[in-house]
Length: 109
Length: 160
Image (cartoon, rainbow over all chains, first blue to last red; front, side, top):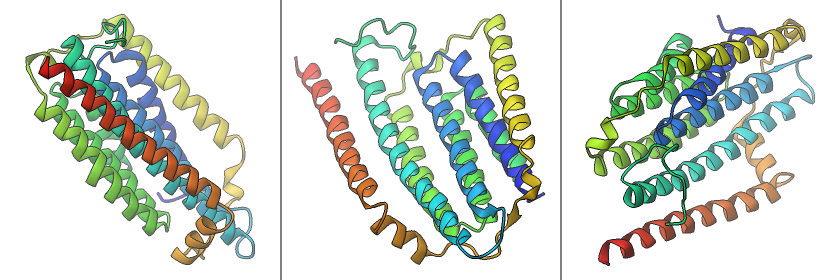
């Protein structure tokens, strides 16, 4: 527990679950869930590899903060993406009465 | 905690009711936040809880519950062949990623005792990463405008 390998393993499992969701699900909201899970897997990798380094001290502190900074940006981007996708889903539902992405042949409205 | 994180992610995708799926997603995001705490990143962990669970998960829940009708519950079951293919793909990618990382001899990496402070993060954001910050501000503003425009078009449709 709590070694770098564990965190990387959890990240890989989350990414695999996200891929599984993207492949099998046809509901637009489930696809959004899958994408969010995959984004979180990537963020977890950033933080984990920022905390672990080949050597301790010195310049390693900078790379540590860099990983966390990237994750902050990534979280903000994911929030914006979720807002836009939810708006699209609501509009698609109003237009087509359905959120099944295989039924949405045209988004022209 | 890792079991909770992965288990909630599976619940998020496999729950019958999509509302329970949204709650499972929130649980998974919370699990990732606790992993951030374990990795000496409390600032990012609190940010994750505030933004993801406070905003995104609640936004999804409200969207699901406010606009929910019978059709939302009726979800097309994927064919068993698709499901098996999906499980195989996910497993293969998980195993490939894990093998690739463990083949890189990560045991040579040590846990840094000194973690990044708020000052470090703030300095990075406001100096070398400031173009990213400004670009991110533009993207956020654009996404807000896009969401508002989409919902405005929809309201005009209603009035017709």
